[in-house]
Amino acid sequence: MRVFNRDLRFQDITIMYFTGLAALMVILVGSYQAPGNATNVSSFKSNASRPLPPLPMPFRVPLDPRGELQLAWNISYADQEVYMALRVAELRYGVVLGMSDRGELTNADLVVLWDSGTKSYFGDAWSDSEGRVSLDSQQDYELLEAKQKPDGFFLLFKRPFSTCDPRDYLIEEGTVHMIYGFLDQPLASLEQLNLSRIHTGLQRVLMLRPDTPAPTLPPDVRTLDVVSPNVIIPNQETTYWCFIQKLPENMPKNHIVMYKSVITPGNEAIVHHIEVFECSPEVPDVPPYSGSCDDKMKPGKLNFCRHVLAAWAMGAEAFYYPPDAGLPMGGPGSSRFLRLEVHYHNPLLISGRHDSSGIRLHYTPSLRRYDAGIMELGLIYTPIMAIPPKQRTFYLSGYCTSKCTKTALPSGGIYIFASQLHTHLAGRGVRTVVVRGGKELELVQEDQHFSAHYQTIRVLRKMVNVLPGDVLITKCTYNTEDRSRPTVGGFGIMDEMCVDYVHYYPRTQLELCKSHVDAGYLQKYFNFINRFHGNDQCVCGEVSVTEQYSQLQWDAFTEEVLNSLYNTAPITMHCTQSTARPFPGEWDQQPLPVATAVLGKPRYPCEGGAPPPTGQPLTPPV
Image 1: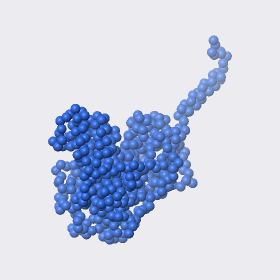
Image 2: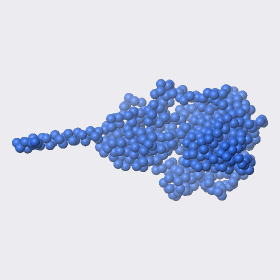
Image 3: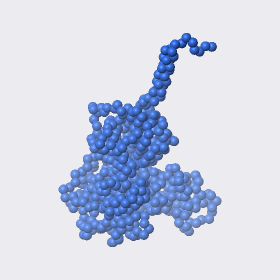
């Protein structure tokens, strides 16, 4: 068979050669063509007819320890959208921003800016269980602006709270775990990207914030700085620094009406969170101290400084009290000592950095109509409550019963305007609801992406009125998959807590409204489980509750019966006054409150639901 004709001219061969070469080039170009759903940033022009959010945006946080990547954002509750502005100080080949359940790089919802070598692209993407990235077929991040400015490259984009895309993250109230990454080489295709192979990091934020304007401060407002005394930040990843500050001598009663963080310039990416605690008035003198909160040689009286006065976490804005209320500071019956606690997160192990960060309290001698108060809800700090080992999900609930609220609250009730959730390391979620007439009536706060490493006071979008006879239930979710022994309640970091510090007014004598399972019923549980597993020797009362939990044979049956005990057995109520004494009444073996109807989840526009109404401030009746 003859393939070539001897008479074939050189011109024909040349034509065939270049035709084949052109076909090959078409194939190669086609394989590297721009992703069909991505936005070509190189030729992107913003739509001038589209209204942009007010700039600068009110909420911002540095994402990385060096502050090279900063996120700012604004919220439209009317449209159920979040506007985000990402500043990259030095853009190389791209950047990744994402959200995931607990900050994992896998199964994350991503937005990516990447350089193909010739052009730049912006797109909605996702990562699989191995961290491999793919462009999303449903593009829900809308690019509004991409611009190089003197201080970096800026991306402005928006996304709905809910997209009804199963690969997308639902933006809801509570903690959002933001992940980020830097690209150090071009990507011919986004599918070449694996998050496990690039430099990444994690930052936590409260993304959804109230949209009500800040109240005006009174003209006679004064300030008090509770700050670290020029501390040299230790060159270790995590440090909790404690400092005792004394209030001015004979300070009369004032009202704190606002507070905000004071961060030493240059330390914005290291100061992670700050809390100010009031010491117990029962302790007349607290010795001076400035040092590690974990130092075993610190004065024991620091342990009596636990009453939360102010709390701030990275990304939080100023905290305002309602116009009719203020938090008392000074005067008879109050402590003259405050404990400052600053959490330094220093993953780069920077040394020699000085810090004088803390909280600036704004207070007024012109007392407002109502004293604000702080009440503890949830579980008592006791080993009576425990979480079995190896649990993916385990729930514990603390109760403020109708008997206690009927005894302690005024006829018009109280108004909760802010809340701070608290657990230790095993905590994964916290939810507090008001129950009236056996039905869940209103949500106080819920955070199903809760992290013990990010705990701050959250102002509610709508005040919650709690009346005498109402029940407050605080339910905590835990994960102990990495633990081989049971986790009991207590003060240690490896123990657990379930607390909601609610900020409310008018202030009452009720400072603590918490519970735990009846101790007698718990002993019956120990006896039953031990007999079931063939251990008839009773050790009741001979060893501690913690030891009894540890001696149990943990299996599915032991875990299920414990869960049933917590959900059916009577409880012991701690309905406690600010004097640390219980209100008059019988508080042991109280019936467990039950909610027969629970609140439904909100429906979002993509599900056919209407946007929820904006919360309006409430004013208690005269």
